[in-house]
Amino acid sequence: MNDQNDDDFVIVAETKDIQTSQMKEVQIDSEDVCIANVDGKYYAIGNVCTHEGGPLADGVLEGYEVECPWHQSRFDVRTGEVRGPPASESEPSYEIKVHGNSILVKKRPSAVEKEQQLQQQRQPPTRPSSEYELSLLEKQKFEATDVMSFRFSKKQRPQQQERESDDKQSSFLDYTAGQYAFFDIGGVHNDSRGPIRHFTISSSPTEDFVMITTRIRDTPYKKRLSSLEADTIAKVRGPQGKFVLHEDYSKPAVFLSGGIGVSI
Image 1: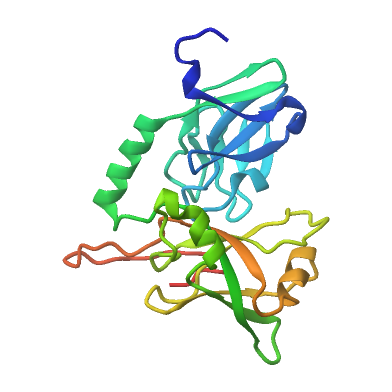
Image 2 (image 1 turned 120 degrees about the vertical axis):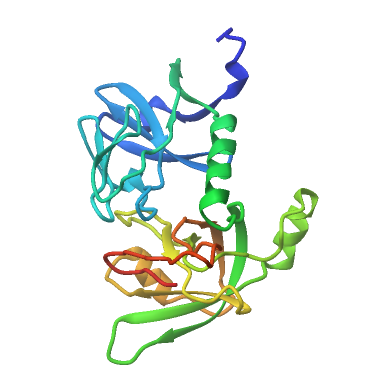
């Protein structure tokens, strides 16, 4: 590769990692990107559904269309355009190429800056997504239901804070009501949906803990989650999501949501 702009491309995966008609989630500068293989040709669009934040790489790929696993919005993996509701906003698309056995995606700094400016006009600025190591404080099971809540420390453990001090990352998971985060609790094996889940944060940003609430199912991840002991460390990545209240109090706000797991 001798192109003058090769420095803008980053290796995200090997061709063997993404078989035909399969997808994979990767991260580029803290952006979640969905890589899709359609008949041996690779495409890259944003992985977070513009409807309510569903992970597109966990969905279904049919031809050039990916269907979100949450509410069945459909997007064209070639352009990011919406092909089916309820989503109405397109996904960002990324330039992609293959060099040998490596899949490379071009970073989009200018597009990211433009999107951030648009978000600032529409809603309160959201915090950058980062990874934290938070310890489990307590868990609560609600009688006669399969629902459990888990409270994690809002401040990450000192060892992680020391490692991140050079980058001046906040030691607190600071979020806006309505956002979600990814929870890696470790020890999850052979789960069809993978070892990590994302949950809407159900605690208020004003509280001194981070809480998630979910139904416990007969899956490896949920079984592991329900058996966690106090002081267990979870790797938490976030916050993410745009389903938040705007700051223009002169205008009304209407929220429409479907399914389960929405907490504001």
